Image 1 (cartoon, rainbow, N blue to C red):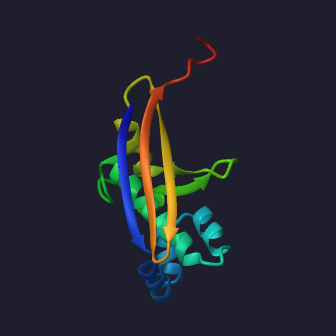
Image 2: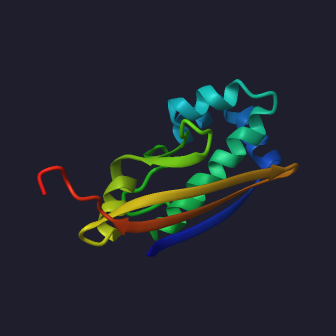
Length: 138
């Protein structure tokens, strides 16, 4: 069952302007350490940051909160599975909100799609609730 959908379109030029103007202050306020490390290694760091920015916005929309109700930028981070597929890692207020919207007996799975075509970066987030796997004790 789908419990949340969000999308966002970010302007890479706007993210580049924020990086130029605010530098590490912007990076550290908005992005996790994993995101900063990954983005800073890219030839086009601004595009990488813009995709991650769009993912955070899309995730906040899928959670139904936006950037309020205790959900902060660094509570949501883009991480990659072993396959390379991106997903979101949630902590703090974002994780609490995810737990609130996940029905009892279900486990939330976050699906993330990222793309960019200069000057835009786009992200889609779908939060799906699936039946929880039975525990070994059952």
